[in-house]
Length: 267
Length: 348
Image (cartoon, rainbow over the protein chains, first blue to last red):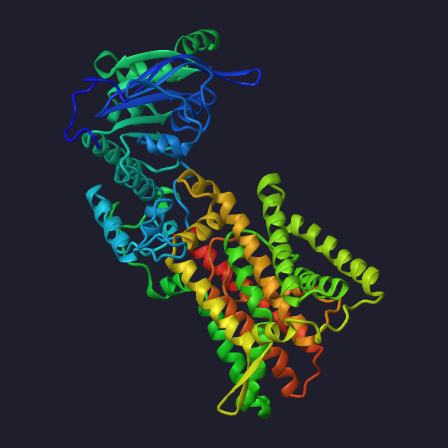
């Protein structure tokens, strides 16, 4: 992590910057002319209805699909990722709503999956099991997740806790940018609260957070900066000081269209 | 994983699960172990010859004949895939070595190594087709099963004019290879087949790999949730192809035992064996859907197989009951597995 303390929002060079980014899948246009800045110690919320282009946006940032128009700058350098591994190596970690963990595997194995610590270089070298257990437990405790036994299958944890393990994992492995895809969509009120607290903790640790959600209430609780997408285009881009929750909710619900619809349906 | 299923304690704190639940969840072979003890006691009571130490040796040999390939099939199933071609593949390996060396009058070592390359190739093709096309491994390996079954008979018939390879016991290199694959030795007056030693070695190695290495972690992850594993950087395709090739390797190994143990290979054999390997793994607690299981469980499954196949003979029962017994065992094993899955799924 390059930012030891909480940076002032919007201060300094952005970790990720998008300039006029666009993407099509064959004849279908998914994104057009998107500008976005992700700063250290800042939560950027991307809101939008189904099909608004949120998923495409994170796929470009996380390296699953490259963009075809505009520029993607990471630390000020124009970049085009060709695999998730490349994005991970640049410190951009993505926590997917349904791809976070392998349910039947133990918590510590999930924590280190894909980045296991081994004692030796030969193919069947032993895992450093005790060390990984200790680190997993300590890192989770740091994030405020207290699990009595990191040897239990992660499927026995609640949905919110699983998201938290995935977030703690991303932070431990040196993520500077954390992209969260609908982290609260499948969760109840209390579990959503737990996850939002961890998002705030990651922000305070100096990470740039991109929060994808369709819930303006959750976004407004932690967000510093709000972007609303609609049919692949940006319809709103405000700092927290310049927008109210009501405005966000109104825009999310359809904004002017809703007003029109309400007029039309008035009896 | 709704909010209602959350524990009563404050959200981030977790309570320890019931210890029995934990035991079942963390030790998939526990059910098979209990079943093995029960079956052992049953035959101990009803079949006096079963009590002799020599019988245990015979049971272990029968177990090793299923158990060796079952180690690899079990690993593959933990990795979320099936292999229905493993039964005919070991015949293919044996035939390759036997026919090649006999027809070209080569040293048996040459044929044995060519057979190894072919067996690994079969595994690679299975794995490549499964990962590349996305067709379920059940179908891909069913295809391989039919192709190999036909090729075994056709090629053997074309070359030797019968349904079996010729006796190769007087060929160069036969004796040294027999020492490796099909010898036996005596400990305390009991004859032990070398396949039993190899089997236990493979089980130990597979257990080590599965529980204590990075590759083992990846095997479990790939079978548990391939998409999640890929997202955190696990090379899913390589792991799966490697697992199919491991099945190829152990099919070759057992095929060599057949060749050097019996001097000849029957081209039509091996059909139906593929299910015995799968049953051994499933009885041993391997989930049919992948993501959980153990090599020791598979070994216990193979041991149960050995006890039943020999115990029925020692007890003087009609050996035809063997398959009925096997069917009941499989059903009980699946029930236990289902119970385990429910426990993990509902406690979210």
